[in-house]
Every structure is written in structure tokens, then in C-alpha cells.
Image 1: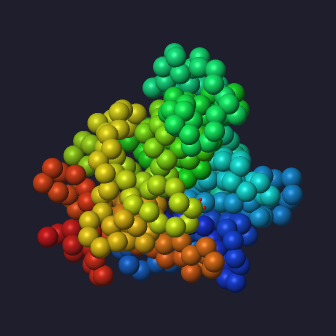
Image 2 (image 1 turned 180 degrees about the vertical axis):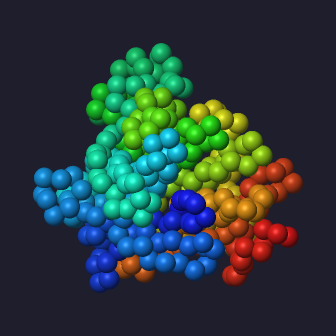
Length: 331
Ligand code: DGJ
């Protein structure tokens, strides 16, 4: 979701009727609204290619597209989780496309494994130099979990670039943009700084919750604290959401537990985090947006939107409402 000149633009994975599976047949679709209730169809913002030599060939996987606007260049920059045709979820890349118009057409530029040749800022010398390899250890053994925490996959991917699956983007108050992605085989989130034009990675990045096995990151800032709501990793099935808090975006993130309360709190109300939208013109108003995946018939996937509330400690929490509207934030 992007708010630009009085309008919300909603970007999403275009699904095709009667088509099973999660392969991109069309591209990224865009809708617009000035009130969050009534939506206009703005058509396809980014199209897959018929050209078999393009990484964006029809049949690849495009997930979780996000668009940010760069005030200095006047360009709209889209990033998305990109998997290559015929390679399952192995490529773990992030794709980038740009446009001068918010609704597109976006021109596909590249897909990368981020931060090749750079160590995370919060990596120790010992972690850089450890020589244990993934093949030396049994997956999910205690030694393996310890090695993962200590950067087993960061070292494996150091030269070629880090993995990037579920992702989101965030622009901080100073205009710097960050790409937040599930990396290290979905075992550790990375927060990576983007260049001034938002079109590449600077190489500055941090690991968040090493070995925490988090994905589906969504982020917002409230009262000088950064909050992230993400999920565990259970494929298309929902699980309990996870709340993290930090004083600075690249700073130390503290785990605060499950932000959901009430019935179905352990499956995030049958949904998975995707974005947190600050509502324009309303104070302390943030909408938690989540996906209800329906992998057998992806076009039947649904959305859950819930208002973020704050407890006595000032921390966010989520409860289910059968029905609510934006007046909720005026109470
Ligand atoms: C969960 C992720 O959050 C989704 O975006 C998608 O990648 C599925 N996993 C695939 O199983």
C-alpha cells in the first residue's frame, strides 16, 4: 500500500481464475482509493514477460510487491519477492522495477540476492571466521541451530548475496529506505539499507532474531519506537504472529510475544501479516493487513484488516472484530 497525493494505491499479486498454484501468469495488479472503502481498478502495474530469456518470464513467482516513492528522483520504485521459473523457492531473490507513474507501467530492472560481499553490521569477527559448513551438520540438530544463529548461512551466501524471500519496504522519517526480508533459509530476518535512489542495496544490513524462523515482516513506527509484526514459517498455513520492538530501525530488536488476543490468536485470526498502513489524517491510526491464503484456489485468497490498538505499556495488540470502520480511530 502506498499513499501518494491524497490516494492510496494497493499493489498485489494478480491471480488467475481457475489456475492452481502460485506462478505469476500476469504480474502485479494495482487498485486505488481515496477513502479505503471504494476502490478503482488501475490495471496491471508490472507485467510478466513472454521472453524466455527474461528472469521475469511468465511462470516465475512474484510475491508481496511493495512500491515506494522517491521524492528526490520523482520515481516510483517497486520491489518484490522473486523466484525464478522452474526453480521452486530456491532463487530467493528480490526484484526491482521502476515507473514515473504510480500505477505503472513499471519497467523491470533486475533481481538480486542482496548484500553480496558484505557482512551484517551485527556480526562478530568470530562469526565471520567460523569454518563450520551446512553439510557438516544435521538440519535442526542443536549444533545446527547454534550454527545458524552464528551465521552459518550468512557465510555460505557471503559471496553470491543473501537470500531474500518474504519482504517489505519502509521509509524512515529521514527519507532513508529499508528492505526487510526473510533470509538465511527463512531462519533470520535481515534489515537492509537501500541506496538514496532506492534502487539498490548499500551493503549495510543487520540480522534480526538470528534463527528465529520469522517471515511476512510488516513494520510501523509509533511514539519513537519501531514495531515489527511478522509470522512463523508454516507454508500457506497460518500461525501465531510475533511482535518485535526497537529504538532504531537497525538497532537491537526485542521480542515481545504474540500481539493477538482472544479466540484464534494462535493463528493470527486465520491470516498472515503483510503490511501495516498508517491512516492519513488520523492520529495513532494504523491498520494491520494480513493475507488469508487459499493455495488450492489462490484467487479466493482473502484479506484481513484490523485496527492496531495499544495496551497500558504502549505496545500494539490485535483483537478480532467482525465489523469495524475508520471511526474506530476517533474513539
Ligand atoms: C509463506 C509466505 O509468507 C508466502 O508469501 C509464500 O511465500 C508462502 N509461504 C509459500 O509457501
